[in-house]
Image 1 (cartoon, rainbow, N blue to C red):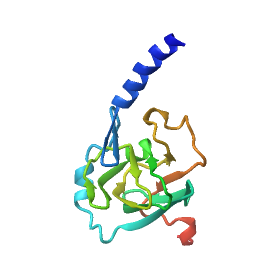
Image 2: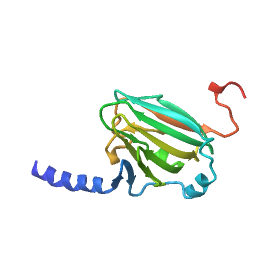
Image 3: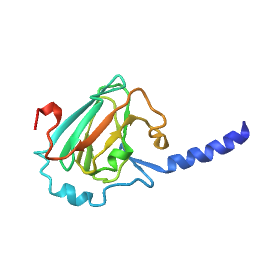
Image 4: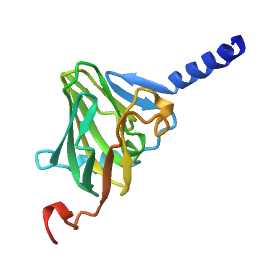
Length: 175
């Protein structure tokens, strides 16, 4: 048992050191992000960006699938209706978008390379970004930085960026 503890404590310390948290925004060592993020978000009129609402209630995220158009700007509002903090962890998604800023109450972060957002109980986080790379990205309520995809909690959730700017989604009608 002592040998296990001697191994576990340094591993836990390294895992925590690989992740930094600043006012609810998580950044991880070695995260890959969009190189020209600043240029992509600088030309966006955020008043014209589409708003997407994501609601958290009793540990469930609604909707569980969010479809986005590639090369389009979005404002993602994550509203936590629970009595406890929730962690919106989406490493691959945040690596595939040009992030402009994250706002929670009075706090504002212009960090362009993040991996997760801690949304306080009964509060809303607002994430401004441009969807750059197509793909299907999972997100989860997970406080553990090295556990992405391996410690699945409750339900599967997706951010789908397969739709080019000129294509109309099936929900919007035929093109």
